[in-house]
Picture: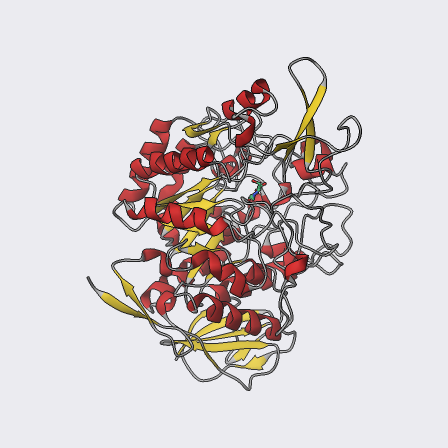
Length: 570
Ligand code: NOJ
């Protein structure tokens, strides 16, 4: 087998065997509801995705990750699964999945599916059986049912709150019509948590993995991969007010270690790791380098790295990077911390700026109010972003990210520079967060608006009709893919160039060697044959020597303006 050295900025060097494509891959997240609609019902679908795959091949990505398309009542946009081994009719059929996957593979694109193991939908037959079987039954043992507190069990078993707002417990009506036990749901009440201490649950999920691996899936993005085990006794816990919604990937000051006592009894419990070791054995039975990627919102990065030890998962999302504010010192620090933390366990760092749960970075990077990390914004948010500043910073940030060694995740539409849609009418919102907080938190609909493909078509080419499950803003006409195609200054062409140069210069396998002396606001480093200079400040600087290969804004001479990134031949 070919052995490649995996460059890292410290003394450790790991050996990359076989293809290990995931160490350097650019993985593009598709949110099926909003990518492309083939039948005009206003909802994206698998056939729509398949028809648009050539555009992704042209963009230059290596793999797609599909957010859930399984049978689901869609109370949390598909993260409430009622059948792990089928496709919801909203999105198509298993045959459509097979066809999409074959087309992707023919185009050289790998396909990662989303696995949602922390909870099912309350419509899932397993949960319905648990309701019917009653207290003490084996079926109830598949989920987390408990008697309530108080004389009549009328109080929830503990004080845990749902990530989406409100109590994390719901009381059920027993078969005799009396109020009975409570079940745990860290998310919506339609998403009951499994009890992962149950061997039966573990066996079911091994089967689910095999089902998709047998169909040729190249891997799994694992939802809430830090949440499946709960601390014994389910002790009370009050989250810190400033914690991130999923458990707080807050960016710590250098040298500050997360306080273990502050760790929620439902996040990052040590017992989760044996589950992934078990799954890794299942994946390793299959040929072709299949991967597990963890969605684990934990602090600090050295803790996240535990999810990607050699016998566990392959990748973990780098949310500390996503949540880093636009500025030189913070970016340099998080890049150093990421490379050190992941390389210490022989894993590649990942990088990500946007996804379906956060404010799009073309808006987030220009927020000015208290909500700088952008946990949902809407018309009444204080400090709404300036669109011009936001797009400029987003282009600079993406050009910086795509030059870093490791694997990068892109979220559909960021290659078009799409902003968050902040003025959705209340009546259009679907995120359970909005409903569970009585409109206090806007939630995530603003980053999920269906994509514009053709500027002058109904629904901007999202589908064949004007229908779109969330209303699209007029700016979609200017940002549509066809309008940007071939325009050298467009965001789309910037991404294409960055992805081509990244591949040609082997940046994914490279290393970061810092270049100092350009000012505190400047993030500058050499990665192999490319020098990257990102100016996060307002004042222009003079670029060091070297042919300009890419610039996130047009340059005049050797001047690099503020909020601009350039790549130079080193
Ligand atoms: C994380 C997913 O990314 C998010 O969209 C979902 O609501 C929660 N997990 C619950 O599944």
